[in-house]
Figure 1: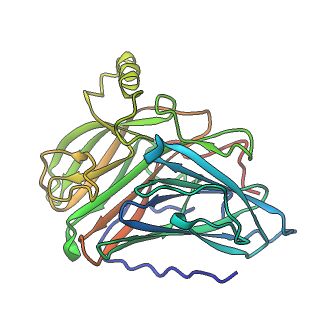
Figure 2: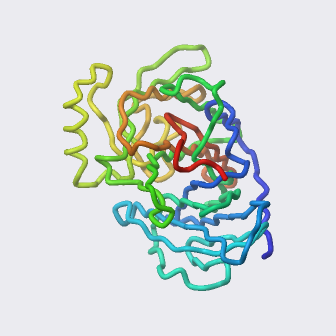
Length: 324
């Protein structure tokens, strides 16, 4: 297959958390974002396992669509070693050009999970916005064994308005492992897979601003299970969490750098144009083995954009998903 080379344009200064050791190396399970809301998305996957390979080496592709209540569409694909395929999410075809069995409607957006049955691979993604900017980055792997990172309950990213940044896109979701390769992973329901954070913002003068308490879950904010989720959180009597302001899969930063798509803000009423956003994890719900995936995008609304990843929480699928 022809390799679709992605060359990232770094237009803004964006540092997401501590250095990640698994975003551009081989791994068994990879996660990315897709967006068809006046955007096009391309997911490139390469099967890199150097062991014995056959034309039947399977890869499970799962597409979770927020426009369908985080509904899952999935198919199985076949790869050989060093085989590469680019999935045009709007017009999906398998590695051999076949129909995957579903078509995503306009305005779909959400997450793509790539799982290799017995092998491993790498991947990256490219999101082209109709306004001219692009988001490009590696797919996140669902494992990070870096013991030198910060406390598991504290995560952050830096932001500023260099290169004319005026909009942001922060995507986050809990990914929970299941036992079977055929079943892949779970991203919902939201009452069973979520992370609640207290959010703070630090400006360049090291002044700390208290922002809000919110929940990342696989929902566009309209899921009928949200009241049940809020009740469950309240019953935990967590004194560190205040009133939850939003339950969503995407957010903007603040009033100065709001969401590209009108999503809720991490720090409402705040107008700082440069600093650091801190996520202090207060509560979560997931399967025994889970990972929290977060991507951060900044753009100028015109021709420049930058995308990066944030690793968070207990992010190791420990026993059943050891890397081959």
